[in-house]
Length: 302
Ligand SMILES: [Zn+2]
Image (tube, rainbow, N blue to C red; front, top):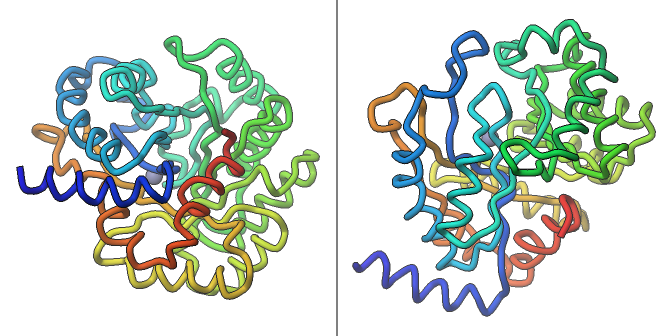
């Protein structure tokens, strides 16, 4: 009860600053790999029961949109997300695309064989027709470190073509500034503006000059994974971007969650409130609506 009251009071205060969007979180993740993954590996009802109160806390704190970044073949479950969105009364977005990071462990056989154009057609079809009745609202991909290999380059190219044809933004799990720069080159080759690219996990690049370079090129630099242990570094990253006049190219989120498929009871399902209770209060108040509302809408759409 005390936590609920605390969140309600904080929520009333935050609401004065306007609604917010969480651009990178997860409800379910299944690291089982492409040969194991499929329906029946968990009970959607159990996930719903565990996730619902965590999303309701976000809603109390002013969250109106939650972007679920779990890609297909790692547990993307649009039907479950739709049910959750319904019971909580919040927008939950899902994605299309294929994730090449983690040494291609989550790349299915067909994606190794098909061309970038063929993969893009598949993604574009998902956007047009929906997946389990839900239309993906962004493209999620992921690469290994630079220099990007052929398969990573192909997945990014497929994402770029999809972006060009659908207008959706590409969010890419990217380990370093060098890799982000190579991805931006591929977008450029496909005629896609850097504004359509989100460098996910930019906090893992410790050299701010890469953040600056990507943002000046027009890309979105996303510092996610915000939690107690890392908050000081995230704060420094945001302050750096502000000091360079690049707050308008900056995104923040927690990369939190999630129901761990294969672990008893879903394992340690972390919630989504830390950014509201602890991180946003450390920022200049004027930055909050920019980082949590204007930028997410500019980056991914309204
Ligand atoms: Zn993530």
